Amino acid sequence: MADPSTVLTGPKLAAREAPPCRGLVRVATLAQLVERDRDHDCSGFGAHHVCVKVDAVAALPTRFGDFQIVAFWNNRDGKEHIALAHGDVMGAEDVPTRLHSECLTGDALGSLRCDCRDQLETALTRLAAMERGLLLYLRQEGRGIGLINKVRAYALQERGMDTVDANRALGFRDDERDYAVAAHMLASLNVGSIRLMTNNPDKIRQLERHGVRVNGRLPHVMPANEHNRRYLRTKATRSGHLIDPGQGEEKP
Ligand SMILES: [Zn+2]
Ligand SMILES: [Zn+2]
Image 1 (cartoon, rainbow, N blue to C red):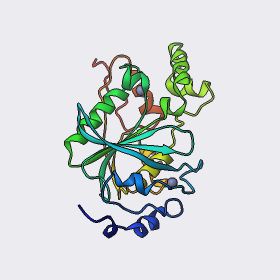
Image 2: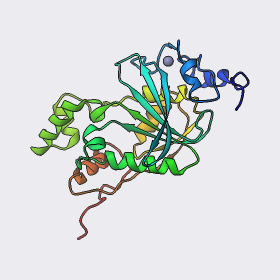
Image 3: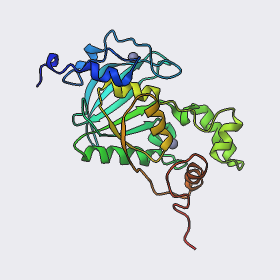
């Protein structure tokens, strides 16, 4: 194991990140991030100045493969974001990375209204099969509008609205997610650059705006089912996702 004092390359990171996280020196292991971050408090990422720090790290064997779970504290909303790291991601370049936004109904309850659980399970399976990979599990339920509002939006969709119009009828934008926290998590983990597993070009743009180096995109398209076909089509035609809008359509 490398002596942590010999792998301090903070200035290189600081030059790219500019103001917020100048103090994020490199350490040798994920577990050492807890001590490094004990007093971390920076001016924060993004419009809301979100700052996170690594609070706890443990092994997490899963049905998809072996990961380390990294729990982050954050100063904004008290939400407990986590990262699942497979292999050695610290200091690495082109790390295959998936940003997954929490979806209780899909991830835990198996809802077929969306493709979140399929996306999560497929991502973890793919990442675990690679030399290294990273999944950030972001607690922004319902594209950032929260669980109750997501259920309200479902009720509106039952009356004929699509997911974009339903969110707008409730006073939200199509997508309220904010990737500043993800950018800070990547900086905290000393990830040099990523290849993002996504169909959503806006995610890449947002991360780059926050100083993340995105060196490529890994497509992550799930097959449609009869319940989420309209949702997926709306993602493609109204939210700019790079999936085939006719995906899963009945063949004539
Ligand atoms: Zn910070
Ligand atoms: Zn979902």
